[in-house]
Length: 255
Image (cartoon, rainbow, N blue to C red; front, side, top):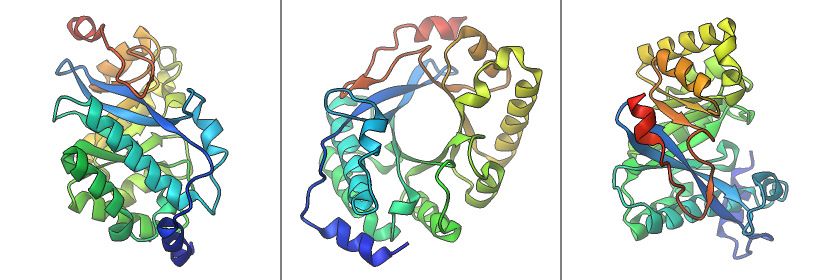
C-alpha cells in the first residue's frame, strides 16, 4: 500500500467522476422491540445498485471514494435520525485507510457538523476484502475503538479468514453472512455452525447480527440460537436517502 499516494489522493481537489448517494437498511433488536441501527448502502443517485458504483472505483480514486462515502452517510443520517441511540453502520475499505488518525478527520468533522456522537457510528469491514497488511488493519480498529466508534466484521463466514480475523481484531460485533443463513431452517449442519459461532462470540464478548433474513423460518431458528439483532428483507428493504418503515416489528417481537 502506497500511503503517500493515498494522502495525495485525499488532498486532491479533483472530484469523483461519478455521483452516488446512500440507501438505509434497518438492523432490528427483537429483544427490545426497537430499531437498533441502519446500515448505509451505496447506491446511484437514481437507485442504481452498489455494483454500478463500485465498478467505477479504481486505485486512483479509492481513497477519495472511501472518505466521500463516510461523509455522505453521516450527513444524510444527520437529517434522518431522530433517536440519539440509533447506530449508523458504515462500510469502509481497510485497504483505503493509509493512516488511521489522518483518514478519520473528515469523518470526525462530518459527525461534529450533524451532532452525531461517536458511539452512534459503527464501521464495518468485510472479510471478503483480502487484507494487504493485517497489522495495519489492527491499528485502524484499535484507533477507531479508542475514539468510541463501534466496529464490526461484515459477511462473517464467507471470506478469506473468518476465525483468524475474529481472533486478530476482536470487534464489537460480527455479522453472519447471508449465505450461511440461507436454508438454515432445514440444515442441521448450518444450525450447528451458527450455534458454535454464537457461542464463541458470546465467550469473547462479541455481539452477533444475522443479516439477509428473508423467511420466518430462518428468523425462528436464529432466535432459538440466541441471536437478537437481525437485518434483512423480512423486515424492510433499503430505502434510497430515507428510512424505511418496519411496521411488523412489534408483532414479531410478540410472536
